[in-house]
Image 1: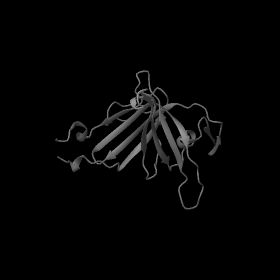
Image 2 (image 1 turned 120 degrees about the vertical axis):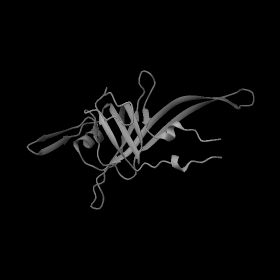
Image 3 (image 1 turned 45 degrees about the vertical axis):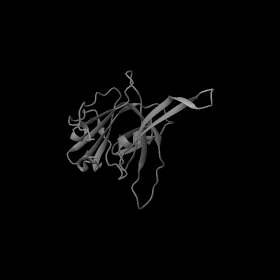
Image 4 (image 1 turned 180 degrees about the horizontal axis):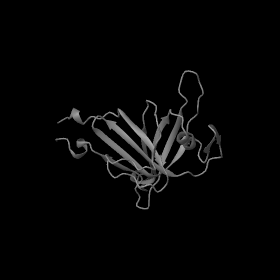
Length: 187
């Protein structure tokens, strides 16, 4: 068995981004994000969690009741992170459908009952010179966590983004400049 410790990656840093629907995102790990895309700001040290869930339905044979096949009945890709920088962008993501209005340096956030709010999302995950970029052409904040107002911790906004499939069935793109992506461990 051949092992390659140089191919072990750690997400040392990165960023989360949001843009309007129908944004054309970068198609590699190095191109700058479009001007319409906003950096969400500081993310907690928990980083970003990608989840891929697949539900299956078992088909049992009449003879003996054994499982003879599994059919995918649903699948979902989500990204969860906690924003710790308070900004107009974060507040409007957390409170779907709400808009921050500022006049003469005074702001108000009129919070509405949440409705659909699909947008473009992206993530950069960086380990030294290795860079993974995740582009979600169509996504939405599907869950939010509790906000705690407390004297010894940052006000934090837990967000879960659900990625939706396009007409071609693609829900996300991952790009990288990491040479490990183009190598196969020796047998």
